[in-house]
Every structure is written in structure tokens, then in C-alpha cells.
Image 1 (tube, rainbow, N blue to C red):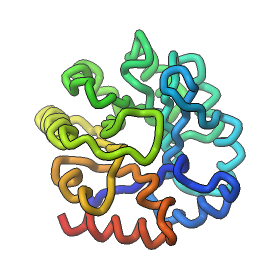
Image 2: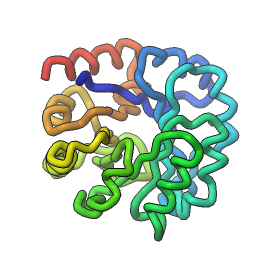
Image 3: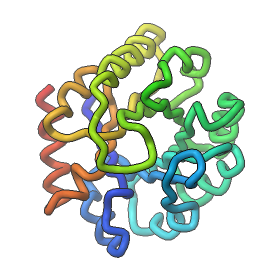
Image 4: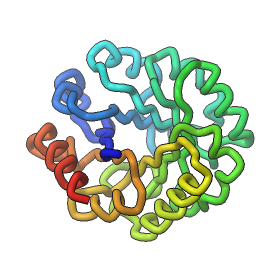
Length: 218
């Protein structure tokens, strides 16, 4: 299965959002980082912005909710145009209930794990998930360096999925560049989130194409 790419809008030029989105129209998803200033020490955007940019992209919207008690806002983010909603295991008391709420909206459900959270914590909900997002940096800000121990974590999760024949993709987010991309793909990543590696380059479309080429060599 070919590696898929989800450029992170957080790293784009917000004053030129429509044009920035068009630069990555050949991606597989558009990754939308929602932060509330409570669960993580940063504030980004909410359903209003997602709704506003929906008409400017045909890509599936991969919305990553880095917010406390995400169950309060599932319906709003689904109605804004999200195709996938990923919530943090650590941000809610009843993760299975939140997954059910997402599925009831007719969209895909994902769960994200912070670097220190073990993959074993997903054992009893993996069958329900469409994807797991492994954070390879501590969430809250872009431009951080990849945490090397996350490669073994990706590989462990991949074994859990394969051994049980689950239909669940592994997405990885944080500090991914061309120099470490292949080790992450080899470990089992299916979807790569890239922010500064794409939008921080002089030519985001070319940067995306180069990352696809690097991943294809694995």
C-alpha cells in the first residue's frame, strides 16, 4: 500500500489560505490541527474556519482535535466538513463513547496518542478505529524535532494491527522530514502528516512530490 500524505494547514500562511490549499491539491488529505489553549498550550481555529475552506478543497479533511472533552463538539466539526475526526485518548474520560459519537455522524474515527502513552492502551478499542495518530512530538506547536523512540512505537502498533487483521491505518505527526521519512514508513506508517516540511518550503507542491518519491523507495 502506498504511503499517503496529509499536509498540515497549521504550517501554512493563514493570510493566503485559499492559495495555500491549492498548492497541496495533490495530497491525500488536508490535516487540520484544532487546539483549544487548554488541552495543549496553543489556540488555532474551530469549525467556522473548516466550514469556510471546505468549498476550496476536494481533499478529505483529516481533523485532529487537540481539545479537552472533545465529545462536546463532535457534531459541529462533522457538520463543518470533516471527513475524519481524531481525538486524544488522554483528553476524554470515555474514549469508546466518543468514537461512537463520531461514527454516528457518518464519518471516520481516529484516536491519537501522545509520545508517552503506550499503544497497549488502545487494545480494546482498536477494532473500532479507522486510524491511530501517533504523535512523534509533544502536541501544541509545529516545527519540533521527531522523537526517535516513536519509531519502535509505530512498529509495535503495526504488529498489533496486523496480528489481529484490523482495518486501521497508522498516521504519524511531528518532525517528519525527508531524512527520517523512510524509517517511519518502514516501521509501519500509512499516513504522514507534514507541516513545515511542506508549507515551510519555497515550493510546497514540489516538497510534497519529493516526500512521495522518498517514501516510494522503501
